[in-house]
Image 1 (tube, one colour):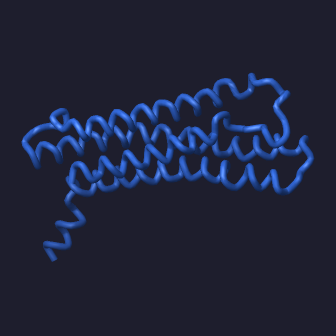
Image 2 (cartoon, helix red, strand yellow):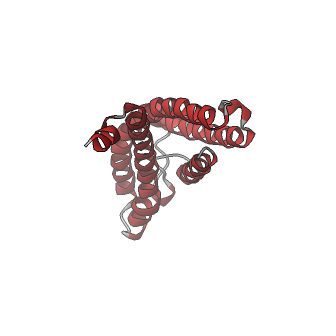
Length: 171
């Protein structure tokens, strides 16, 4: 009975696990939503042969909902990412006696991930702030409700790759 209680009640393990799960879940939903728009919505609208005047309202409706969710996920990702960084540093100290500042491979991948995250956030905030100011001239199958959506999707894929590499560098 004591071993079962210690598994479930050890907050030193439970908090980092739940935090990491929330971080991963948020990233998967954000990148997955973007992937859905890029890989399903846009090609689906192209294949449906809709009149050009319907493409923009449909893609804008999808993006409107995605933007709300992505904004909330942004806050969750930033908060849980900071907490993850704290726990990873603790793991480094407990395993090697040194903090993460003495692990250059981890730091390089972390910096690459942060740069990609900042680029992705910049694209997201650009669409949130300047989306309503864009000209109404963009139409048809070239219209993107999320500017640079393919680039953002690839950045998301590489962010996840960096996260996988970082996970294996501190085990």
